[in-house]
Amino acid sequence: MGRVTAESTRAGERILAGLDLWAEWPTATQRAIVGAALESFAERGFHGTSLKHIAQGSGLSTAALYVHFASKEELLFALSRRGHTIALELVRAAAVEPDPAAAMRVLVYSFTRWHAEQRTTARVVQYEQGALTAAHAEVVAELRRDTERVVRGLIDRGVAAGAFTVPDVRGATAAVLSLGIDVARWFVPGGPWTPDALGLLYAGLAGRMLGMPA
Amino acid sequence: MGRVTAESTRAGERILAGLDLWAEWPTATQRAIVGAALESFAERGFHGTSLKHIAQGSGLSTAALYVHFASKEELLFALSRRGHTIALELVRAAAVEPDPAAAMRVLVYSFTRWHAEQRTTARVVQYEQGALTAAHAEVVAELRRDTERVVRGLIDRGVAAGAFTVPDVRGATAAVLSLGIDVARWFVPGGPWTPDALGLLYAGLAGRMLGMPA
DNA sequence: GTCTATAGAATGATAGAC
DNA sequence: GTCTATCATTCTATAGAC
View (cartoon, rainbow over the protein chains, first blue to last red):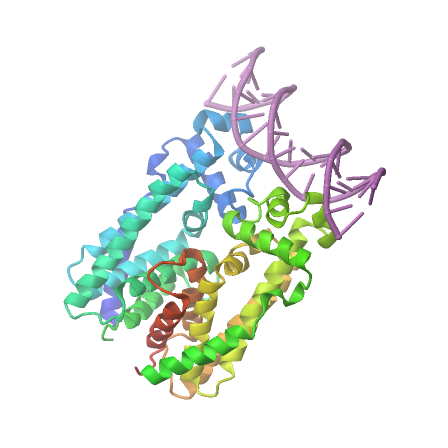
């Protein structure tokens, strides 16, 4: 199994390296604002964050923020959409691998590692949807449905190929996604696992859930 | 396996029936306040909830709330502590079963079903800790550590007895808890699973993760 | 124990100078 | 594009009548 895990790691690392959260915000000021908002939203939540937090975190006045973003909620939306897009691209990149078992290992490795490494972004993505306007919430809901469809499609493919054995494909999809997503809630750097080690561990556990031969 | 799942269901149902969230609040007014707070905290989060929400949800004025609770944060703390205590009692009751495999099935079934059935309470328990004062956060953190210890202890016992095979006991503990906890985030009544069906499904998936013979 | 009224602070967002 | 100043509102919590 050593070879297999090393391959998953390398493929997963390549995928993660190809994703850049910041591509949407080219200027230093934008990045300072988005970075400060990200930190505060992740730590205190959207409603627990005031513009003063974001202003102080980015070294600007509250008034200056409005030159770059129309409102606090628009700032959250931009962040949430970008994070959801990254997560979707991540699972899509993993799912292109033809062998379902290998694809699933890479997917769970990357998805888990991303939730650990980018814990701040992931928290906002996974837990602050309720603060969006209805129209904005629908945009990210569609991205979430796409992500879920990719994972479900891969499990379907694995079952059809005889690589996986699952009692309930939708249930297995929910479980695989839950493992990764919940990492954003509990993971703290400096604990028992590096993001890499956790990704490998969870790839193995997900494989067992899907009835993959060890 | 039909017999085994039926037994897990019955044992889990007995445990859930023995737990009463409301025992701490005997009067109708208290229950109205706590119920309204629970709904709003779960839907909008602590910081997204104003006293007006709670007052309107309970049919009282905002001033009347202060007769029953010292502050909004004390109300959250009372709720969070009670919910954490229920979750701890739940896993403890499941872990008394001598056979590790049976105990784990009952534990995952009950824990998952509780997070689905009591989704409102579970959301506040799992996602609003950050809004507590440092002193109150420490109280619930200790309850969480106790819960984690019970699950870890059961996995240790199963490994020692040869009933489970896991590469990393702490990692397996995190994964088993994550499966149940994350249900509070995504579960909606009326979807593809009843809380009972999801509990059974996840008990099976957790068993596979732990290397339990089917 | 409940109410109306309100204090006192903080909030999201805007106006207008530079 | 950034600032200081400020508006209008909302918030948690309290005062005092019943």
